Length: 96
Image 1: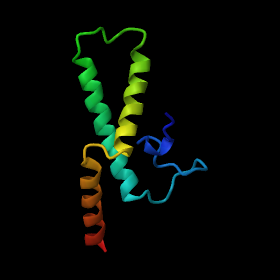
Image 2: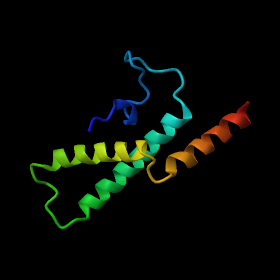
Image 3: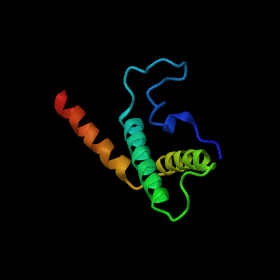
Image 4: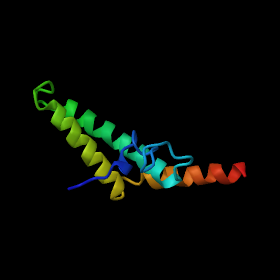
């Protein structure tokens, strides 16, 4: 499974050449936000488990959480991105 960097909220503001893009689309901003929320949910769920969170595999588990959150957001997620995108478009249209 290959996940592009465009779903990562820390990287989504960059264009393909590495400079900041002037205006990211509402869709990419909303997907990035949903990915961030999903990542926080997955991290909270993992920390509430009965297993030892400080093991040597904790870095790999965090990377897995990041990848899963990005994938879920890109695949439609929990519907949060659509709501955020709708709100962003309302704000943009009211400022015009």
